[in-house]
Amino acid sequence: MYGSIGSHGMSTAVDIIAPILGIAAIAAAIVLFIKFASKKADKTKPLTKFFSFDHLFIESITKFLYVFSTTSIAAFCLIYPFMSAASKSGARAAGAFFEGLVIAVLAFVIFEVVNRLLFE
Image (tube, rainbow, N blue to C red; front, side, top):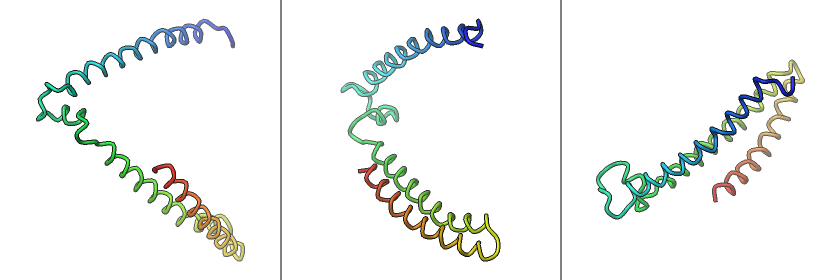
């Protein structure tokens, strides 16, 4: 029911707590950045290396995500014709397999091109 006390109280609590948590996260990021990324920070600590811009971890993370998404697309496109054939029986299964194969090849080319464009 609209306007009930329970739902109104929950949304008000979220409306109050969310901005406070956002401001606290910004303040924590500033403090951590000043502490670990400043010129005076000890460069031997692991967190200092992580926050330092001398070595970028985002490049490694992006490479991993690209390889993961590429293999996921390939695995889906390999399995799709078999999934289409499994849903049918007899002669329809062979037709569904070849139809699924055509769709999988087209999807593989389109998805890989889009994936590559997204990671460029």
